[in-house]
Length: 400
Ligand code: CTP
Image 1 (cartoon, protein in one colour):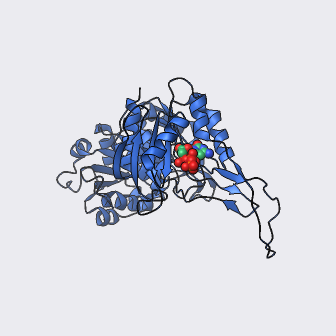
Image 2 (cartoon, rainbow, N blue to C red):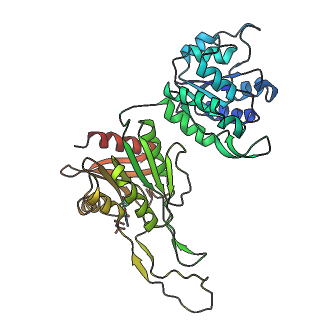
Image 3 (cartoon, helix red, strand yellow):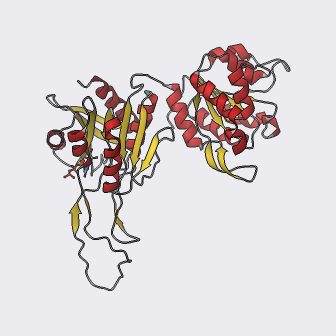
């Protein structure tokens, strides 16, 4: 795992919830990414999990008491408040949200929260009724208004035996939110970015489909980058292997026709459209309602062409909207991509190599080129998809 957060200090506040044990895995993941993770457990959290668990996975002292025993050097509350790059409170109970909203400082965590100027990210976890209570909702609204960030809660089975909203968000969704919070830029604030992502599944019969090897990794990296830059993000997503970040609006679209419909319905509200999906170029002309039986005979499947979504988006976009496409090419990469840039009427195209040793489909890296009308193609060499997403947004920002 890359030491992405080697220069970061994260204060992980753990409150009294059954989900407290999940914070330990979170602490471990953050430490593995190189962060200095200081954990503070409230008195109620210590009913659920021991400080020693956090100390073992982070290699740092866990903070439990305000005054006694004497805090270890560097973990006194004002020192931590000033030193932390991020306060992550997960699980965050209704109680800590209420205290944070009203400036109550009656233990180490709430006092330090009041003293910090670092970004604060809450991962709420509580019973549905407590979460939906007007007091909790009002406290969250107040905190959001002041700039606090939230991830989750998710829906599902709750400790109280009921099923509903209130579960601590999934670990990976919290890690995404941390990545966004730690490196926030505001250059796309207020801009609405729509990203198509992943493959399509074009049905043949109730059990079979035509698909491709796209994983959704590029779409996910683009969505995270857009969120990091404070854009409002919508991902129109095919059936992907890696799901888009939870902070984006996610619109599932299995077939090219569904993807087209979802894009066109939102096009008027978009400032940027990025077509990262590996759209199925063809669909079965006839979809059998019954399972096609294996009878030993040869079968012929007639394929009908699908609409070109990105070309239509470029033709129908509102003035000022930027439309960016990808080109998956196995040969003559730059010249084929230049052709697509022109034919589809795009503002920019990113060419990826597919097939061979540098196959971008399903991989974490891509041998990429960037092309804009009237400019020479730029080779980016072999680049990881996170860095590629960053380069793409840097370029979109500069588009005329
Ligand atoms: N695209 C699209 N709708 C399609 C096909 C492609 O919106 N029916 C978009 C892709 O999301 C990508 C760009 O067009 O942004 C280029 O896709 P690519 O697969 O490289 O090219 P195609 O246009 O499908 O042409 P070919 O398969 O012949 O290379």
